[in-house]
Amino acid sequence: MTDTARGAVAEGVWEFDPHGAVDPRARDQVISDIGHSGARDVVVLAHGWNNDPAVAGEFDARFFALLREAAPEARMALVGARWPAMRFLDESAPHVPEERRRAAREALPALDDDTARALAGALPDSGEVVRELSGLLARQPTGSLALDDFGTFLRRLVEVRLTDARADFASDAEDDRLVQHDPVMLFDDTAGVCGEFAAALDEAREAVEATHHRPERTEQHSAEGAAGVSHHGTLEESAILGPRAPDALSPRLEQTGPVQTAGGFGDARFATGHDELWRGAHELLRQVAGHTFRRRAGVVGAYGLAPVLELLARSVPGVRIHLVGHGFGARLVAYALRNQAEDSRAVASMVLLQPALSHFAFADHMPHQMRGGGALAGCPERLAGPLVCCYSHNDLELGLMHPLATRMIGDSASLSGIDRKWGALGHDGAQASASFTSVGLDEVLRHGMSDRQCLNVDVSGVVREGDPPAGAHNDVFHPDLARLIVQVAGIGRED
Image (cartoon, rainbow, N blue to C red):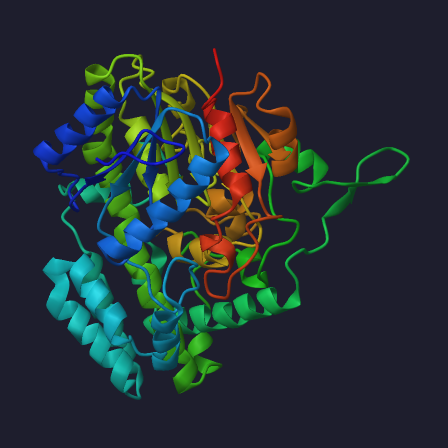
């Protein structure tokens, strides 16, 4: 751990392997340094998916600098929770060198060398499968058999035994009373799935080109028929379920379908050309890799970070722990909170930035099933303070790709469209939870949390820049977001 010049008394890193293991000497050294630093607050930041320690370090450094600016006099320690994941380099991300992104885009639909190496490095037990997938994307052979082979290798990439800990982290839209399943995209007709993702990529581009601010949804809500404008969805629906985007990002997110395929994927192979199918295959690989890292984030949070937080709380009595996670990193810190003892209150606050979680993760009761809530239902009770979910309607990764990629086999058909059942927390906030109130970023920065513990905060005004397919998912390096974290945590505030 190192001393810092301004805004924090110390910084450090905990590095976890895919199973959540951490070097005990390095772990204990960071905890010891926190104790000796006199820090009152510890901010633990978990990145989303970054390809190597240097890129993950750049993410931490940029965000820590914003936190130091937001609380220049606070005695706080800043700790990065590093874990093995990777991003496809054609995505826009401000902390990734532009030349690497350019090379990745020029290689599409093939994998550029850096992305292929990062994928093989993040999945070391699947090196041969990654090589086969990379080879198919590079050659783009004709015929449906090649796409069938592509689908077979994808299933091999993610397969785990039912006794494997990862099998319990496929979804967060159901609690542990229900069996987990893998997504439909792994088992439906591969050509159809590739065609669906190719079409979704086109719609993502159109969404970025059209506007960052689509008109708000309106509805008739009084006996006189006067129209009202809702900033968080239809007025009545928002009061019951929570916020939602004013319109679905794509008509395909409003489709319903049979029980077995839960809406399934269209028979797009008959309307999609060869080149488009392989472009969709590249996106399918991205989403399947994301499924593996989604599971891994749950494992690392539950079995890696959770016990480290407990040890920190025991070793440094009185220190206040604040969890911050971005993307899949938000899933990691959320599952770390879930695995705290019910009466521990070791964690003082949690802020989720563009969380790659089901928007029903905190649901008290799932609107589409007879019993059970979300996987994180009850987690706010494990916090000593506030829980904030930041969402943006400009996040294409979570608003369009996430619901297409997370539909589960065996789910019942969605009566109101797949965006409602499989939507993401980082796109339209926590749904079906009486604990959450929805506000705008400006409002909470001006007035604070008041007496509210759980907030959905619409950050669409600042989290708005980024190219498809991810859109604004990675646009989180903003002073206002750092100010929000500091305010929610009460850093620098005298009790």
